[in-house]
Length: 320
Ligand SMILES: [Zn+2]
Image (tube, rainbow, N blue to C red; front, side):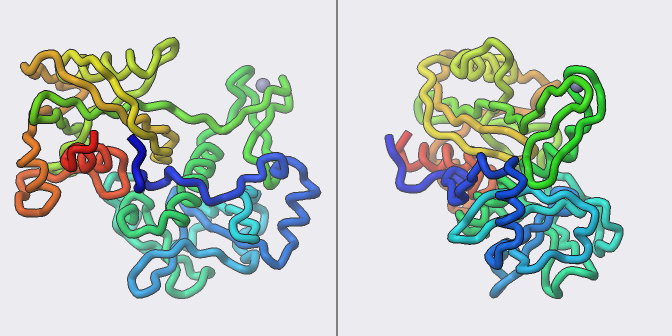
């Protein structure tokens, strides 16, 4: 089945020009071009402006003085513009609450006194339903790479401190010379079907009343199909078969690639592993339809833009 629409982040708009990242001279040339644009991130939140209350990723024309002493990352080219990313997480001049920083529901807009008026650092997750596909795609790369840069400080081979050259994505070890590249963690996310019902569950840390598809990390030496079967069985006691790949979605929270599948349940009795899940239930197509249309508020599902929402909607439409 091919879809005319896809989950957010799935279409690429950026020409990554990966071979240019570590060619210092090339990146420097781009950097000096008039068409260079600068994206800013602070503690995982990207800088947006709001046009008629619609969020737009802010592309600065000039290098701000607040970037002094920081490394920049060359993200790629978009419509003739060369995009560079700056992480100013250490700047102390950010206004607004940090209480919900890094949580599931950070709706705070943080401003910076040296950045343009009307620009705000916003949590990508909270903006998902409102972003253009182009902005979303750039944000996914920017957020993913910034987070990897933040947490990857030491060599995984010898433990020495890693060094990074400006513009590049990778880091390298001065001691053993091993290079480290941004990593992606594959996650299977399953729409488990049984007749007219699907299996939905909720994690302990999710907002109240939220339910979604079951998901889990693929382990070393495991195929996607086996991971899909194992995760569902471990979390809910439901055995599955007939696993079908549907679509996938880069999910930079912080570094997952979500692989969306459907499967058929072979039993109905749920046995929740409460270490993994708070609850899991079977929900009928009619009920899910009412939830999606807003006429039933007994629970809600993942936000528009997320692959879980995509899978659920396509099932309600009878397409998968
Ligand atoms: Zn090393």
